[in-house]
Amino acid sequence: MKTLVLLTGLLLFGVTENLQAVGGRETTSPITIHFMTQEAELAPRFVERFEAANPDIKLVRLEDDFTRLVSELAAGSPPDLVRLGMGIDVAYFARRGLLYDLSSFFIKSKLIRPEDIDLLGNACYRYDGKDFGKGSWYGLCKDYSNIGCITYNRDHFKAAGLTDLSESKPIAYFDDLFHLATKLTRKDATGHTLVWGLDFPDFWVPFLVSDMATAEGLNLFADEDRGRMNEDPRVRVLWKYWLRFSVQDISSNIRNLTPDWPPVTFQSGRLGMVQLGYWFGAQLLENEGYETKYGWAPTPVLRSGARRCTNNLGATGVFIAARTRYPPQAFRVFEWYMAGEIAVDRAKTGWGIPPLLSLRRYLPENNAFNASRKRIALEDARFMLPVQSSPYSWGGLTYGDWNESLRSLVEGAIDEDAFLDRWFKELNEFFKRGKEELGG
Image (cartoon, rainbow, N blue to C red):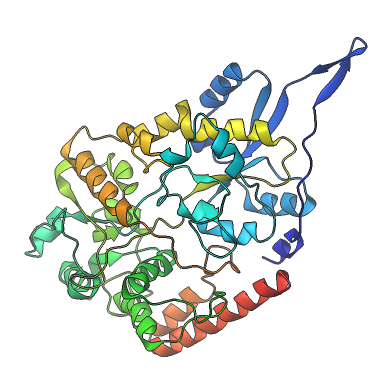
């Protein structure tokens, strides 16, 4: 993170020509556009097709490498386009002048029409210096998922004497989810966990707590600038809710470690429920009997009758670097990636909800399983809101000492309040350093 201090204050370069002298005269050669992303998200066959249709651009994929990205941003020579793991990081980068404002391009684009943009799903890529969903456009998500959506194992529900969940009426966190997860948890005679009721990646927790706080009309931060955590007891209750899953052995912990992260554990049959959202359905297609074995339910509400809301982690997307030498050419790659053949192909795979409303028709619904997850995802999408996050940290919140403190909590060395005191202190110090970077 210290390297990012060097990134503050970078300015736009002007657009330049790529000219070579040939036979005493100047001729334009193909302009090279570098795109830092994973090969799975920019396959060679698509690069070849793009170049065939755009002979004036040579598209070069660079392997997704955060360390290299930071170094090149600091040096003022970043890739033209960059895969962004979480859209909420737009706030962090935009405040440092590292993102190209695409607003004027969107107005002129024939492929990305402003009225076709999924405003709720892409909200984190629009930022006015304070709030998401307002101001300038700094990119789009390549696709997104309703991360609070539940996938559950019907066999485990049946074994626990539970009925299938409703696909239209959300259950409630405080009224239902903890109770269901408790009943789904199974142990052997020695206390070893055979089936966990619910498990989640640690970095998911702040995003789920954000939904709960938003539903309650609470703020995770104590100040308008989002530079200090809120000590309000009502907010602390929301964090404590998720801690108790591990403390009570309902989720994995140091006493009962899972063999892998939650998606893989669920696929192996040792997990009753996960909250991963629409994309997880594409991964489950490789499991035998997936059509009948797994069920779907919408993102829970806080309490029965409470406001519905969900988020998408900001969603993985793409931005154009402020220092690109070729903004028009970089945007041609961008609009092709978001709205062209490769975008259609991506939607058809069912790995995420597309950034444009017109692409939703390509989402698979060839069987009850796919139709169910699509229907629930698009309904959840109506309640999509930006996650509450700080612009002073990478990833919205840093997770620093979370795991080590969780070990101490599970072992009984500290209580829930001590856990939160320790974690909030670390976060506040991190936010302070982030403010200092920007001269705040």
